[in-house]
Image (tube, rainbow, N blue to C red; front, side, top):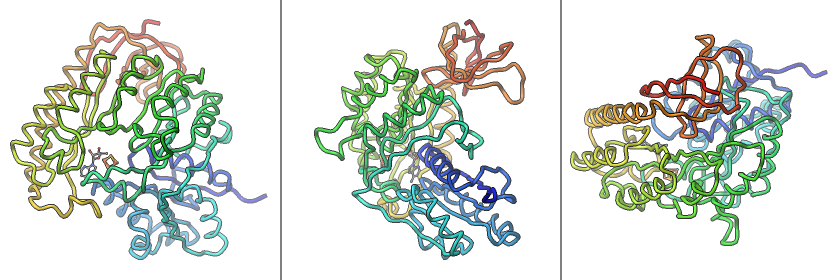
Length: 452
Ligand code: 5AD
Ligand code: SF4
């Protein structure tokens, strides 16, 4: 019998990476690798990286630096780097970090087993970073639960991400993604539905459909292909799936048909992550976002008309090149106009290949920092006020689990994607639906009591 081997997988941010790591974990399991959270025990260390903002990238290099001592002790340890940094840096990463054996780009993750096998047998280094317009996302059926390895401490047994498309055609001027993930490629409808059907048979109740811009699902396949609203309706037909979410959406592609889905499809959770990036038309134009604040607000109003309880969240970049005080003031006004449940906000950073890296009028780092602090402080107040507005309401939650630190304290998630903490005696089952009454609103969560 072949001896057991251990793999350690570290995944940096983004949901697309989480799903890619799960897929690579399953492929490695088929190569007899078992999960470990102890690097010194690992025969293979796989780092799935992100390069969307500069901090994410620095973290990758510092982790690789820390791996040197492990590899010195255990020469046979295979070190693989996947994801956007791997795609972007390719050869450079390999020469800057000679300890790296495999550099596997974003379209090549499905080849991980073969690459690892090659290194095991021949100690030959590999750089697999091809990006092709004619890439086809392979069909990937999940392993049965007893063989599904959990390489991630966060992996859940009742909800999953399912990738429906990869890449992006939008070329927002600040963004590296079109360069690291290539052009939009949609996965086949039948492959998506069979993947979800298998997941449902394994106990998964909630599905999040994933893509850089899910609103343009199918458009790369021609006018006859199933579009995103139709795909949602097909997923909703899978009986055991009780909740459907999706992310991420580009506001310019948010169609009336998709808005209508929130009225038609009960299983579709009333939450929409709609990245606005800036509240100034001048900056949106420099970002190449192809919408105006007015058209964005019209879509927000339309969503609220069909689903008054819908929760909206967003992404915002502060300090984009040329952003003046007046532009930033407009972003602050937008927060008041929309009153998001929450916002992810970032200081602009130059990214390799992104067009804005060469723009003049870079905003001073101190100013970017001040704007970020100001924006986050105001958004925090709004989030708290919004959350307090739920006090007294009865809400359905999907059980997520018991608190690790406080026995008898449970956590559930509302359709609006809010966490509700509540006490309960006995054992609840993750994935089950329960009703809670909200007693208190906090900054990032709600507190409640269990009713049923
Ligand atoms: N600088 C800062 N934030 C960025 N984002 C993407 N690129 C950059 C960049 N160069 C943010 C956007 C995007 C989110 C995923 O990351 O807000 O929606
Ligand atoms: Fe990047 Fe814009 Fe594509 Fe989103 S839509 S991945 S921000 S280029």
